[in-house]
Each structure stands twice: as C-alpha cells, then as structure tokens.
Amino acid sequence: MKIFTKAAMISSGLIIGLTSISFAQTPLSGFMQGKNGGNVSFSLTTENYKHVFLYPDEIYETPIFKSVSTSSFNVYGTYGFSNKLDLIVNIPFVQSTGSANADVLKGLGYSNQRSGAQDLSAFLKYEFAKKGNVSLQGSFGITTPLSDYKVDESLQSIIAIGNHATTVNGILLAHYKEANGPFFVTGQVGYSLRTTDVPDAILSQLKLGFAFNRLYFDGYVGNQTSTGGVDILRNGFNGSFPATKVNYTKVGGSIYTPLDGNFGISGGGGAIVDGRNIGKSWYASVGVTYNFKYNNNF
Image 1 (tube, rainbow, N blue to C red):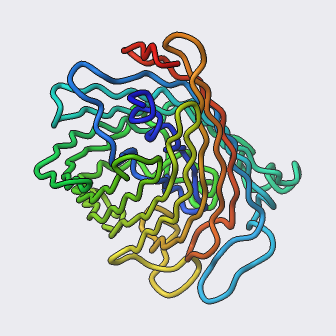
Image 2 (image 1 turned 45 degrees about the vertical axis):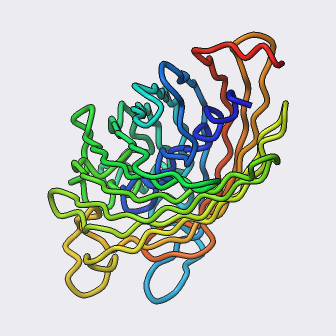
C-alpha cells in the first residue's frame, strides 16, 4: 500500500476567500514518503461563492461583484530524503472572476478578473517519534508570493488572487494507522506567522480515512482562527482586505486510485460551513499523479 502514503497529500487544494486570503488544508498528511519516495501531482480546482460570512451577519450577495468564481492549476510535489524527512512543495496559478455589472465596473474603474502565479509553499516534515501504530511529526514551512499581484486596490481586492504576504508555519501532527487494516486518523495543529498587515492565525485539522489496496479516500474538518485583524466595513477597516480577521471552518474529502504503472488519478471537494470575513464557498478538484516508485502489487 505504499502508493497510498503518497496519495494522502493530493487533497490539499487551493481556495481563495473574500478577503484575498488564500486558505486550504495544510499541504501535509500523516503518511511519510519513505527514502527516495514521492510524487508530482497536477490538479485543477474550481471554487465558487455568492454568500459571504461578514460580521456579525451573513450576507446573500458578494459586494460589487455579486458572486466570485476561482480557478487554479496546482503543481504539487513531495520527496522523501529519508524514512523520517519529507519535502513538500506547492505552486498554484490562479484566476479569480467576478460577476459584476459592466456599468458598475466602468464607474468604479474596476475589472471582473485577476490572475497570475500566486504563492510558493515549501514544507519540511520530520517524524520525531513512532510507537506502535502512532507517529508524531513536526513540520516547518514557508509560503511567499511568486508574482507582484495586487492587494491594495480597495474593493477591487475582493477578487485578488492572494494576500501577498510571506508566512512562516509550524505544525505538529499525530497520525494513527491501523496495523492490519485500512483505517487511519491524522490530527494537526499549528501556528502561522504572517508578514505585512495580515493577522497571524492558529490552524487545525482532523482527517479520517481508509487506504484499501486499490482505493484511498478521506474526510476532514479544518479550522483557521485569526489572532488579530479587523472586520470588513466595521470600525478600524481602512479598505485593506489582507488586514481583516479571517476565521473559517471547512469540511471536505478526497478520493484516489492508482492506474497501471506509476500513475494515479484523484478527485475532491468541500465547502466553508462557517466563518468570518470570508466567502461561503464550495470547491471541487481533479488531478493526476506520477509516483516516483512503481508498486507492483497493483
């Protein structure tokens, strides 16, 4: 079942929120790649929202843009330097599109679309303890902008493709895998330290899944809680969307199956079910993966 240790990280999709904050599961799983193991994945993700979780109430149409759809192409890779040390890298290219009236846009000098390379993410993950079926791991990661995309365009920034900040992330993981069965559970908790006016945040996630011989699937619930920031259109808001307090609870899942040889295909989906200063969105993704090691059990 070695291939499923790689599949477990495919579901880390890219979603863009109302406040120009990109958010997602962390690009980490509890499975280790093993020495010289790893994969490269290419995926397409679409995300849409119309309702917005503002404070203190949910509103039923996105300001100015009515609704927002975001498409992204992700290049995601993993590599095992040893049985205890993995590298994880993600590069997204994003297009965010609004549905605003053309006359409204003309009057404001706005556009219905923003696109470009977003943020490079790179994480190292180390397994520092293992006893029986339980593995304890720690991860350190950096996310930084790949292009000079804009976030200082007032309400135009509702459809910005990111927050143009560098983040430093520390994550602890606990992973349980059934010894002679497919069931696993992974819990994560961490802190994201962010530059510019973007508030720091506490991140957490719980994932449960099954890795059968030719089928992997999981479900998860993830949360972000900002440690500061202001609310959109409330006291202290000066038009800077990256400076807003962004909280959310997200649920979703993914599925993966190997094809013959080193390739596999995946799909996933999810939604924001609660939040603050963020779109009430849903997303779906599909992807193809090339695994460095061929598992001849398939």
